[in-house]
Image (tube, rainbow, N blue to C red):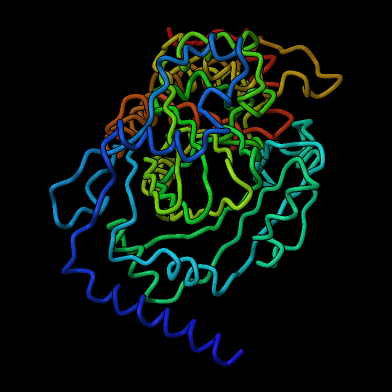
Length: 455
């Protein structure tokens, strides 16, 4: 045991020494896209790309449009990802980094984590507990999956795959200073949150997006990413912000390899033409920009990867939450509903497509969970309500709606992301003013029928 420990520390010491002198070395990047694609195909002949989709679905998706993500060789000696804010890119770990020593370093100390195993499910759908709409949304969280102890011995044991249909693990490692410096050099960012992922061959995670830049390091085995750009967020059947599956597509089944695409005409018409595929092997890095949706599947039982994310970008959230929501608690229920319809109309700038998109995300996610015995919406208002509504619509509301859009333009250059974030903001406004049950009633029952009151 002493010799083994000494050898381990020597290996780590050599790794740390390499990290300290790495500023003088070049970052070696990926091979050309053609060579990269052929390398992965030959490495896993039993799992060709078309194995992801059954025949009919493959034709519906237009497989010829699916391409392999790769990067051209960079000429810069300091070729971190620091300036590649909007580029989806795949690279290789640089020559100065010993991958075995790196694995040893990132798995040396493990903190909190979860290991989910299933005898019936292969696609894992992560959820956010205690979301506002959790008590209203009739969803069975973790269906078919059992939470296990996340000790690393159990976490990284591929022999468990023989008796399970699905196995999905997520653990947060405690990184030492030298490893943090190595990640900083690789990514160009000083503040990162690291998470280890494991899974049996065939285990996948449902289609979802993250709001921050994500660097994925494949350490062992193979993994495949199916990716969609931010411009396709509107057709992915995403639920409102308060839903426990927020940021996760509600396409069913969650596993894209078994889905009936005819049930999802919006996705079928547009998103299928934007699909990208990235196959990762040991030593590959994939940089996923914010708001890129991804479906991930393990291609081998020993698949082990490290996701290193920037902390959640709070600038957008802070900028929007700083804007007051112009509603008062003492308003009558009728005035609140009519005022909300008017304010949402201003926030969405009277754009019919935006209004349909906002309504649909609520109806699709919550129509079957509408509270029972709801009264029909009363669109009439009292005489005392009418002057208040007129004042709000023509004086107070436009001011705050303009502040929201000004903040979005200042913080987000992408028009596609502004379109997505304004819907998220509208969700948050509704959930702030109404209780969860009132919010569902308003968005599913009232919102489609109430006039916009913008004239």
